[in-house]
Image 1: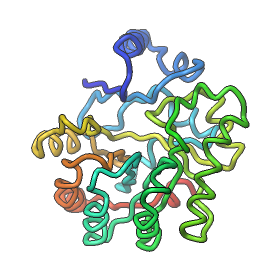
Image 2: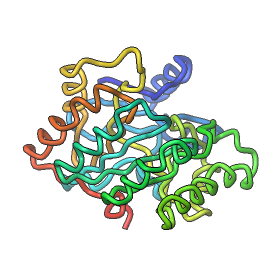
Image 3: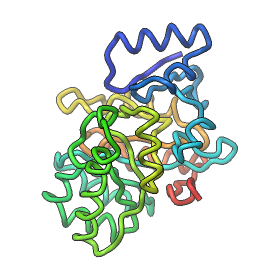
Length: 260
């Protein structure tokens, strides 16, 4: 078994593991005032355990996994700033005829409008990763929450002339149930993930072999894959990763299909 809780303090990790042993982790974490999306990978190529159950998340139009009886997978990238790799990532996606979803932070719309336009023109979904990448569980009112969401809609429309599709990912996966309700009230689907690895440390990138081994062990039917576009390793392994999964019979699908 291997557990990963993205960018969390050791105390929270220990608490969740302790509660998991007691069999009460899902109900505790899902009801808590603040938590971060976490996964426990108990068995290779099986759906990991999240700190909320898929059926509980669905009550809020939130997802971390798709249909686990089908070989559809959903490729997503979090984009907070430009490290020089996004255009190459887009080149690889185009070469392999794969569509992805890019969760964008507000400043990226301002600094990289041409890349946003390219994402849109090449059929990718440009989605909402908030205006300033804050801890969304600390938004004390619905108006505060909305102020982190709606400006990105306008930025996207200014660039593309289109309305942004309403998919939202909380920064670092930090959320509470009120956030899920607020997103739902704004017409958004909240998208977590079931496959990820430590790829965001810019000065401590995993080797190609380590990255591929880790991702291969975690992939499963219905997976929502989270990668960071700021990872040099991700850029370099993406072609191999995509083609390995295709060879295994996986089909890269859209969040539109997941949420329909």
